[in-house]
Image (cartoon, rainbow, N blue to C red):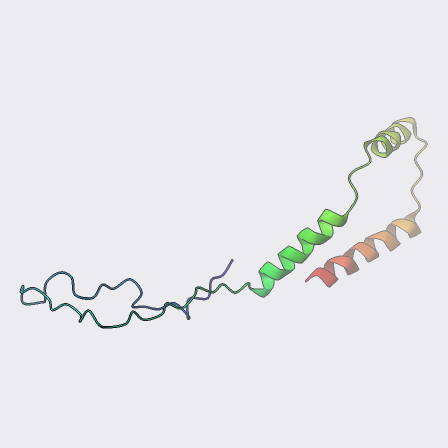
Length: 105
């Protein structure tokens, strides 16, 4: 996830009036009457790729769970030689799946 750091205040972590100056003498302190500067709030921007991932996760959450009974029936049909494949239906399903993937990107 990308974070937009353009809005970050570079002076937010600096301290006024502490430590020593470059010559080793005590630094001057800021006057007590100086009003504190308001801090800007942090901001985060979500990239287009992160938004796509979020959309995919939402779609996956809406999908039904795996039907284990149906899987077991298909496995048994394959093992017994009863499972017939319709090449036209298979090709159509593959094309539909590829179109759905293209829509996600």
